[in-house]
Structures are given as structure tokens and as C-alpha cells.
Figure 1: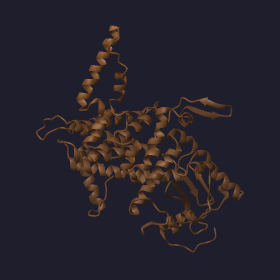
Figure 2 (figure 1 turned 180 degrees about the vertical axis):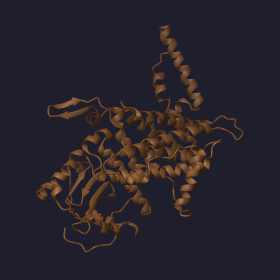
Figure 3 (figure 1 turned 120 degrees about the vertical axis):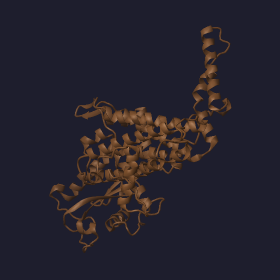
Figure 4 (figure 1 turned 90 degrees about the vertical axis):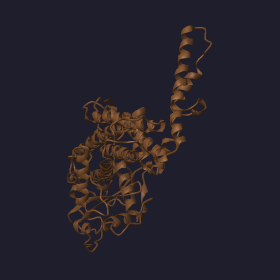
Amino acid sequence: MADASDSASESESEAQARYDAAREALGLPRLSVAPAELRSATDDRWPFDVFGWELIGRTGQVCEMLVEATGRLRDGSKRGLSLNEAVNGGLVVRLTKLLRALFDATQADESEAHQILARCTAETAVNLRWLLLSRDAEAYKRFRAAGYRTFLRILEKVDADHADPVVKGTGERVVDIVTRELLAAGVERDDVPNRSGRWGGDLRQRFEELGETGLYDVFFGTHSDFVHGSWHELRTFHLRMTPRGYELDLTYGGLTPSAMYETSRLVFRAIRDYTSRMPLAGIDLEALRTIADGTIEAAKFATLEFARFIAEGGIDDDTNRLLQTQTEAAALAVRERVEYQAERTGGGAVEMRRYKQDTPAWAEALVQQFVEAPVRACPHLHEDPTQPSIWLAALPDLLACQGLECERRLIPTLEDRLGHSLKDEPAHCSVCGREALVQGVSVGVGSTMIRGMICEDCKSGAQPSPEPQ
């Protein structure tokens, strides 16, 4: 895929040439899925899967290059790393191993380990980038000290005066190990916190400080289910509903494409900062940064297209359980669309009525309809208004969460109002109201996916005379 990044000073072809040169300099294969394949996908998610697998593969390859280049000097020899550098380098080694395992799990016929591995990879990338950007020696010290909370709990249970020689000898051995480990980490017992994981605030705070606030809930938070085994995870992957009740299900599900895209993007953002903070040699750093920037943009593009794929009905119920959950996939996709719109409006929170002039007129019209509609929200949105929701221009008074229970009711509700099947309903443009050939479109605003149908004239900006809808 032509995943080069653009800049104001170079044409698209020049950017592509620079990207191709960087890819060849690093010996990386081209991504095989062309942008047009993702744009044209309507009922087959295969190109999205392939693109995700190749992104994970590329990310792992680049991490392997960084491991080899870290600490290397220009003459080919290597120098030792400082304690702080060792933290950074160790996290990259961890990423490399996790990405290899993640890729292998996505290719296995009988594995769902990728759900857990994606979570671990995302957390590691966020921790690495947070530390790199903090440049705070005390933060690194807290990170090292936090790793010994469990050791100290064990140490506190040691009875140095126990009469049993085996118990006493084991206790002395534990004391010796903990003492040496603390010395190697450059910390003392008083530096070890009472709770693990709070060396830089909690993980949610680290996501927020890196500008990844929305990603914590829709990606990382949901993947906690796969680690701890919630009811939602059991029902989605390990049980199936039948007329007789639930039955056990030993089939295996795949990883949501957008989860692969976001994992790759998080790691490449950390890689970008790693190249500026660590001693590296024997690698073309300029080429590596070009690849990082291009791959980040490619991951964003793929997520936007997957959002469009979902919004246009590309995932049915049978496909859904093999994908992970449609809710998570949709939430990830909406998040990326909202982030993209925020960038186009100058950053920050997206405001429904504020768009730049290059925003399509049909998108403005759909958003305006949504803003002015007297909507009634489903009960789940009353409980949690921040969760992803969906609004159909054809059902302007209803706002549903993206849980399957509510989303499935939208079309039957519309058909009940029409008095016949949608197959028998003439197609009308959501913008001008005319009966015409239309295509499905979607706009992400906040946590809401707005869906409608537009004719060719409205899409092109011809602005035909509106007709009553």
C-alpha cells in the first residue's frame, strides 16, 4: 500500500518516491493491499484483515531493527546502556517479542491469544512513549521501583529466625535476591510504592497525557475482558445461544482489524520518539522516521475505511463473533473518524456545527439534521451517555447505542413505520429528499456515528432542489 505521508512542500508523487526509497533502504516489503481495495470493500473484510496482519508484521520487523541498532557505535561495536536507557531498550525488546507472538496468533487457526497480546502490546507502547517524552529521571526511578512491590510482599513474610533450616535458608535466599535486585535497579526499599503500576499516574492517565484518551476505553478497556474473563467475553467467544439455551463453543475468533491498526500506530509513535532519545547506529534513522510517519498515516486511513465498511453494513451477525465484537470495532472506528475531523477543524474537541469549508456539504447537512432532531436515546445511553451510538437519518427521533441488542432493532423499527420491507422502499437521498440512486455514507461526531444516504448530485455538491422527505 502506498502509505507515504504528505507535506505542504512536496507533491504526492514526491512523497511516495521518498517513502519507497526509505522502505527499500530498510529492506521492508511493500504493503500488498492497495488503498483502492479498502475503499471499494463493501461485504468482504478480507483486505482489512490482510492489511492488519501486514501492519503487525512490519511493526515487529522495525522493532527488531531497533533492538539490533540500540547501543551500537559507528565503528560497529556496542556500549552498555544506562539504567534509564536500559528501561527504554527493554521495553522495545518486550514489544518485539509481543508483536511476534501477536502476529503468530493471528495466523493460527485455533488461537485467541491475540486478544490478550494486543492489550499487552498497547500498554507497553504507551509506557515506553510516556517515559521517553517525560525525560524525567525520577519517573524512570519510580518505574524501576514499582517492579519490586511483589518482591517486598514476599520479603515481609520471611521469618529470619525460623527453626526449620529449610524455611530459614529459603528466607535468607529471598533476602539476598531482593537486596541484589534493588541495588541493580538503583533504588532502595523506601522507594518501592505501596501499589504497583502508579509510577506515572495510572494507565488511563498515561493514555490521556499522550492524547489517546478515547483509545483507552474503546480498545484497552475492552481488552481487559479477554485477560480477566468477563461475562461479555464468555458470551461473545465461548458460548452460543440456541433455542434450548446456551451451549459451549470451542470455535476461535479473530482480531478486529482496527485493533491491529491501533496497535501498530501506538508502537510506531513510540518508535518515532525512541529514535530521538536513544543511542542508535547501523540503521538509516531518516528512512526509519519516514516509514514510521507513513505507516501511522496508513493505519489511520485503514481505520477510517473500516469505519465506512462497518457503517455501510459490511459486518453481519455471523461475521461479527469472528471479528471480536462489532461494538468494539465500531467504537474504534468512530474514535479515529472523530480524531480525523478534530485535526481538520484545528484540533481539540469536535463541535457539531463547526466545520471548515473543505468539509463536504452533505456531511454538514447530515450533522445539522442530527443536531436539530428531537431524539430519544435508548436506555443504555441514559446509563452511559459517553458510549458509542448510532443515528439514522431515516429514523431521526431515535438514538441507539452500538450494542447488538439496540442496533438490531433499528431496521425492524423503520420497516414497521414504513409498513413494508426496505427492499420495497424507493431509495431517497437523506440530504435533498429526492428519489434517486444513492449510496450509504457516515459521519462521526463525538461518540455518535451518523448514517444516511446521498445521491450523486449531493455528493458532488451540485445541490439539487430539495424535495420533501
